[in-house]
Amino acid sequence: PARKHEAGGEDALVGNVNKLMVSPPGYTGVPRKGHLVFDACFESGNLGRVDYISEFEFDLFIRPDTCNPRFRVWFNFTVENVRETQRVIFNIVNFSKTKSLYRDGMSPVVKSTSRPKWQRLPAKNVYYYRCPDHRRNYVMSFAFCFDREDDVYQFAYCYPYTYSRLQHYLASLERRNLPYLQREQLGLSVQQRRLDLLTITNSEREKKLVFLTARVHPGESPASFVCQGVIDFLVSQHPVAQILRDHVIFKIVPMLNPDGVYLGNYRCSLMGFDLNRHWQDPSPWAHPTLHAVKQLIVQMNQDPHLSCCSPPLLPHDCLQSCRVNLEDWATSPFLSRSRHSQLIPSDTLLMSGAPRCQFQCQLWSQKALCCCPPFMLISHSGRRV
Image (cartoon, rainbow, N blue to C red; front, side, top):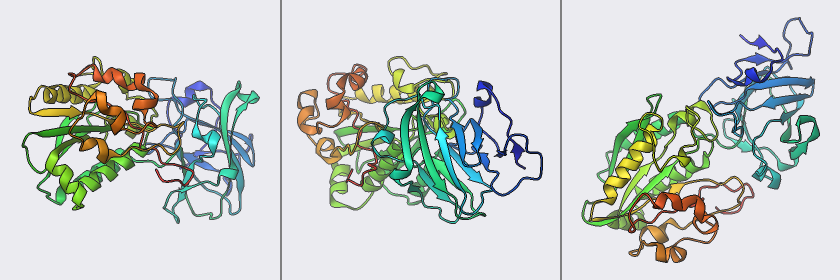
């Protein structure tokens, strides 16, 4: 049953709202249609607080990442008990980032029970601005009209890709019994979720090795869609995929931070760590997934028969239409830093922000190429990514 809204302080942001009915202040009667019910107590959900401003306007507060109040970006929540033709304005009032593609026309996504396919809200209905009423924080406001009373509507920062979705996808791959695909459990997260490792190759002869990772930051869900697309291509019968399997061993970790993804965090793990800042000395108890991946990469890098390339899939929420041609550098016989400018386009993070990526290269020997291509960004502008 829905519970009525009570104005709360910052403590209200510790957890997600749970079937929270928001009615006008002082209202004590039977709940009516149009008294919205908010919920974020589901996988990858995030909404910490709702303030009633008027019948047509609500202030929404993102719940910070667990154990780390610095990061407040990802949101994912449902709304029900709506009234047909009810028009509302939702204000996301406590974003922790100032730079965002919301300033350049990107918009949140929405779906409902009768229309289960995610759609972007029209950009003309979305506003991103610095608000004097909220300590000059950046606020993202969007207008929406509910059109079906029996529907449950879901809104999100961008297209969600949950831990459970990944597990269903990997299970379906396993059932195909492909001879060139192997799935194994590399380790477990703090909350005992699987850290999956996929190996894709035709044979174990001496060849190049590419190690791909994704979702070190939970809110970077576009990385999972690109990672799934890469996997689907590599296990396909496309002639290029067959050539790649003949010449390259692909090791893929599709979700480095399963706890953070499950909890609806934006950047951190369960314990509040930005895992991408702990590659140098990961702890087996605080960063178990990172520790397991690093141990494996170091072990493979010591194999004289392998040359290791390890690009993490990192979306970038301030760049538009980024891309990288995976085929060019994955199959090149000269994977070396001296040639990376020829292999990787100039709009990748390796070229535009090298200091952010090069620290990982120091972990491995000089034969390893490390890069961070942000080619998983899904363009909001309709241009090819």
